[in-house]
Length: 250
Image (cartoon, rainbow, N blue to C red; front, side):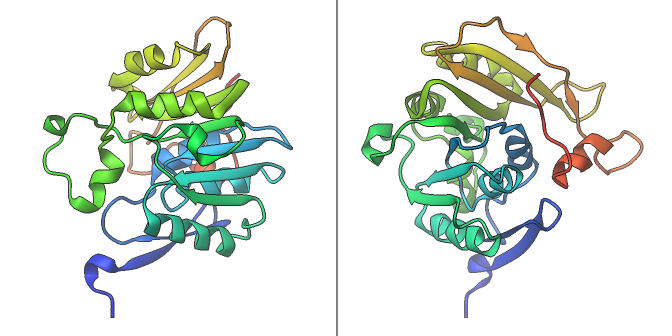
């Protein structure tokens, strides 16, 4: 019998359209994955890649939202790959979702894949071990980018076709680093701040760019998470979590 550290839970997300087997302890898919999925605006017939897909929190929610789009997830943890594959089957998405084991720190070309119409990621939020106090071994891979944020942006840039979109969610205080890293080969940036409350600074940013894009940068209206009077999310966020609303880039 598996011990407590090996326990797996089954969770329903996106109004029950996606089933997620995921470790009971360690990193678990949450709101960031839901927002990333809602921000994926791939058109019918396109191909989307998620770097570091884990058990499929964002990948499968995005696939459920976009029924005419093919998705590929890349994940370095073999156990997460296995769970993501099972989750795709349990959610009825196995025909459009492929999950492969691979390292974001390695060049994209080593995967032997054609470049994608859209790529997305929720990179680890830290790349300096001194900035994070003692993450548990189960969470370290999801929280710590061993090769730094640049390795993730380089992978995304290499994986996107010319004109393709690059979408990620990250800490708001890393926005300048994200824009600088992507600017080498991408432009037409759109940024949506994500605030915990309307009167508090943004904690997250959703960033979208186009490989080779030249349009001016745009700062979009913020997304404010919970209503002040209670613990529940604002109505817009609740609709996003149920899959009834997207996060548009217009």
